[in-house]
Image (cartoon, rainbow, N blue to C red; front, side, top):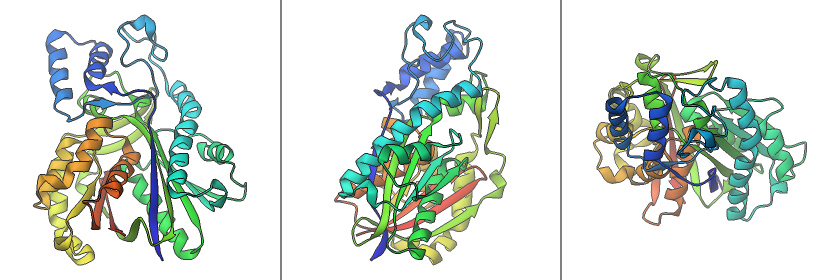
Length: 359
């Protein structure tokens, strides 16, 4: 028996919103003239994203009078503060997490009463008592179920959660661990017209994913993992709490920094994972350029990013939940067999790598 991801459930809020509609909203938010608006539209078209989801209902509204969250005026004043955004998180995240969890358990044929541990992952909302307690109540879990929270680690946090689940199973082989990632990135869209905000506003979306991890001979075996910090990029990806939500620093140099860092680590990957023997890769879809640079650094063909690019196209970057969306597609793809090397990136600049085997 192996510590394995046996099922993955997904959920997204509302109907998909086209990238062009979000671009139109952001043109209003940034108060751009026609020329700058065209430039912004061009940037959005280059992202490789067709649509995204949001818990907010304003991004595809044609009139400011129809806004529900943002002020009903073209200046969007007063711009919603962090408290207003966290109120939305507290109200909407539990149901989204529950939907993903139920889907995950149903696919595995497991009852919620069988769960022994719950790990909640999120970097887009924090509250105590937390979403994990609400989720326990919604799932009907015993109060004795052990719970853990992984907060504010960014896009690689699901890797941290999966490693924690693996370590729990090594200590308690009969455990059944539910990992739930819920990310409401669109709560933190920023109005200030800056390079960081332009990049962040153009790619992030909302979603939740749940993974059941237990000892099993089916699913994705968790074989090994590796964590690295690329300190040269410590200031190029950062995440902080501001007066108007959480603020992302997202440098345009991140793809090239990852490319350089991965090339320097190729010998480490070969020794740890037998990199040259691996044909399947699950890369966090942090952006079209990131996927391309990782592909080039490993000297691979474009087919290795097929599933990641599809997730990016349909949902955008959902922070930590994104990699579970990619792995869910790969679990169901009969063409994917054997070893999978999965990688995620986040503040630090942190690189997390997970070696999986499809059983």
